[in-house]
Amino acid sequence: MDQAYSRQSEDFPPVVTALAGAIRTDQVIGDPESCGVYSNDAYTTARQLPMCVVLPESTQDVVAIVNTCREFNTPLVSRGAGTGLSGGATPLPEAVLMVTSRMQHMGTPKGQRMWVGPGVRNQAISDTVAPMGLYFAPDPSSQIASTIGGNVAENSGGIHCCKYGVTVNNVCALEIVTAAGEVMTLGGEGLDSPGLDLLALMHASEGLMAVVTGVCVQLLPIPPTQKVIAAGYKDLFDASEAVAQVFEAGLMPAALEVVDGNLIQAVEGLLNAGFPTQCGGMVLLEMDGTDGEVEETVQAAADILGRKAMTLEVSRDEAHRLHLWKARKAAFPAMAMNSPDILVLDATVPRQALAPALREISLLAEKTGFRVWNAYHAGDGNIHPSVLFDAAQGQTEAAHQLGAEVLKVCLAHGGTITGEHGIGIEKIDYMCMQFSQQENQCFQDLKSAWDADGLLNPGKAIPTPHHCAEGGALHVHQGQFPHPELERF
Image (cartoon, rainbow, N blue to C red; front, side, top):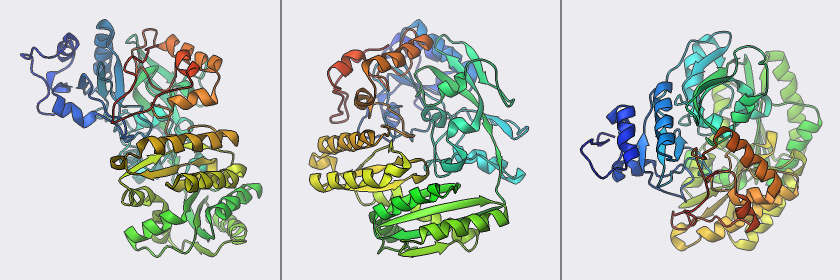
């Protein structure tokens, strides 16, 4: 950071010199060693050095950066905290990487709405408004580090999306800077806004159409009572069938998660928390509301979950509730301690298809010899089969091939190739599996309407017709893109 930029350097391209004049020089990082810190997001099988990194602190800074990049016809990739899992924020060597982590302004809550900068951490929003009895409902697993700008870009979910929805359901308005350098506000602080729903359009747009510079979040009252049921099952399939039965009974949990037996054992090995390691799957169901409502719905859910459960436990108090949630919250850290590399997949299936889809995925894992572990958002059918592999042993290609087969299973069951992690570069092949060339062309046309020169995050999320015609061929080898010639739209 301190080695940002030297005006005397003759090694930087003209656009970098121009950026250092458009914003402060200490907001521009040009040396390769410092830029290397930003070479990838959490999708670590793809790394690239950007041309330079810029660190805006205001909307005006973003306008200056966008206008400079447009003047020099230079691609611009936006990045938040880098917690994304699909390579959406992976830099490009010929592009400027704009990191919005310094944009941390927070307004004053008004009418359960509050404006925040894109660099504000998800968890920090709830922490700030907790003394007022409020919180921000979306809670992705990375919420301690992930920023609200990135949450909007990927339309992130989390444990409580079952009842309260994903990011788009909890945002009232956005301030954006378009590729033309124009500042716009989409949505509003009222209950409804006139015109097209462009606010929803920007969610999950992965930085392809505009840069988010402000987010008006919807805050909710903290529920007076919350209780969790932890039910252990013989296997993951019984657990998944129990999930479907909960919804068939007309119950609406605040959160409903499933963790497989491998992860229960891994978490227990990490925390020594007393979780039932003899079980092959665990359901974690949370109800919230008034005391009477929670007592009634918890009993109803416990009756359903208890039909096939080997173990069943209801939280006694708040400390015990948080303890039970550790079985889910610690799942991915525990997984990381059991494998040098992990391919965290992200797909959805209808809730009634959870058990059959997971059976097929289990058979694929047995056939290929890979360990595939799972902790997922059962409430909205968003599964995260995770392939454990060792890149140092040359297993990367085979792991991604297995990942492709898993996504095909989800599509065959009426699902989608992503639930909350986005397309990025990881799933650009599979856009051709889920959508026709005509549908992908519509996506391209939509991007072009907002970014006619194709400068914002090129080569991500939307495949070209040529790419689909070849059946998709984007695989990452040794951290390098095989197609540096990827078209910009």
